[in-house]
Image (cartoon, rainbow, N blue to C red; front, side):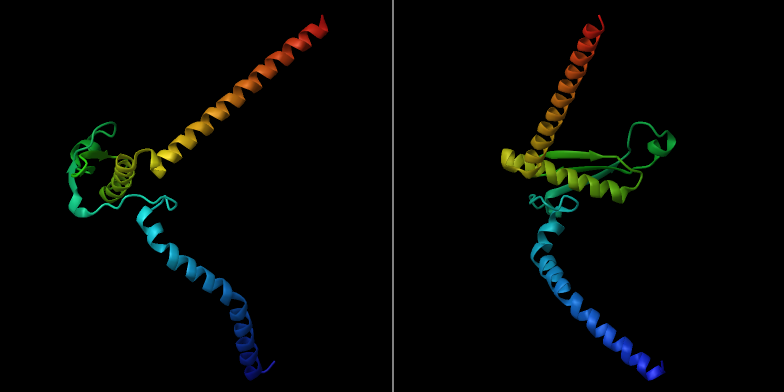
Length: 162
């Protein structure tokens, strides 16, 4: 294969593959444009439509954490205390050693709590919590039923042996 024909072949291949991917790329762009603001607002929990928090409503402090960790915990002020002034909700986050990660986690937790405070039972956070509790109870009930079946089965086997 000569060099000019190789360039022609790669050009044809590129045009053909671009034609195949073009509808998918356009669909992806449409989805990202329409859902973008909702996804950005909610962070990790992209399916939630949470109440927006502005920096003017928040009061942030960095304090020394407590708990296990010894000197590393006691000397550094990487625990974040975040207060939502209008509602009075306070969140304290000391899950990691990084101040930036703690700030982000504290904001996510505070956003969920404020959403629950303002929307009550209509909140997506409340609905998810209820659904997970219901799922947990159902799983516990099924496990208990299975245990009873096993117990009953063992009793039946022992009766058959006698």
